[in-house]
Length: 87
Image (tube, rainbow, N blue to C red; front, side, top):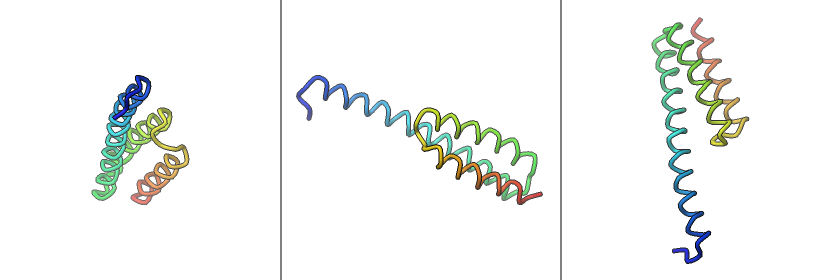
């Protein structure tokens, strides 16, 4: 365990950030699952609306530094490709 005050603070801050990042990643994964479920059901309208929501969630996560921008771009690209394959 840390003895120095600043090191103790770093530990607390790291725990807070870890919890926030975990919540944001969970939100992104849930959004992706909704898109995948709509694609599997071949429901174009639900897929499009959930894709828009998923893209917004992923961009928000990227702006907060949870995901790298290339990772987000790759995920968005794959989801869009999947939704377009229904039509």
